[in-house]
Length: 216
Length: 132
Image 1: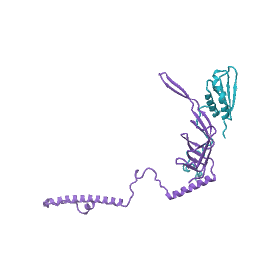
Image 2: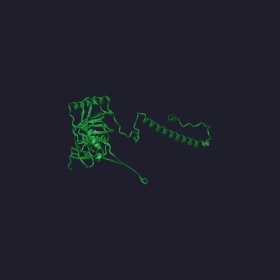
Image 3: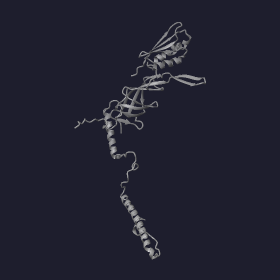
Image 4: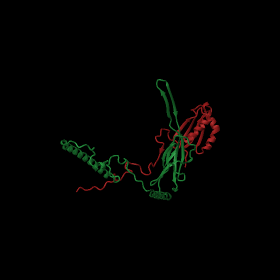
């Protein structure tokens, strides 16, 4: 539309030549109108041309608003090959540390009795249930989620292998909890029931946490 | 590496009282088995003739606490269960314990404080520049 408008004068239907004494005024009026229309179209065309010139070179600078980029910081993921190399190096180093025994105290996160505990060695734990093990029995805990030392941590997804960690504990005592009062009372209904509950409890002492160097 | 906390069990009852029947049956039948099953607990049986206090099972622990349990009008099996329960306990008071865990070394990798994992710009204080 623009180039065609820009090319020639504004289209106006050809009319029969008007009478002479009105010609000049009409001619001037028509000329002015044509000029105006031509000028407007010229301006418009110029604007459109400029805008097309600026946006045609690819992805030019659009105005930076609050919605041009997402609000979270842009994260650059590392190269997968390099990352694999880095991972292998880290695993090798940690394996070396474990094999050489360069770790002090170990702590572990263990799932036991429907709860997760963060335990170290020589640790006391009490659970509100009955274990089928006599006092003095040694128990091995198998659901280990995490093992850590001062310099490194081994995180399982969600569990660590049994050949990697070994957590041992001893049952120390099996007692009852303190007597808890379970009372139900409805006012103005002469209804009250009192019951004293004492749950059985088990106390464990974590003896050792060991790791073996078999990472991959 | 397990030491039973129960030192000795004293069974005090009188042979003539009617409510000490369970205690007498326990002494006749199950006391020997119990003593054999728990070799590190000493079981004393002391009948006191004539009407006396109610029959009682006294448990003494290594930390000095003494616990008395009434065994009047209890059957022999109940007394056996009670005795095993006492044998499995330690001498600590049965009160409300606040935490179900106890550690001597709570943190290995260093306890968290608000400045861990922050850039060290916040903690480092450079040398004071003299005003010139």
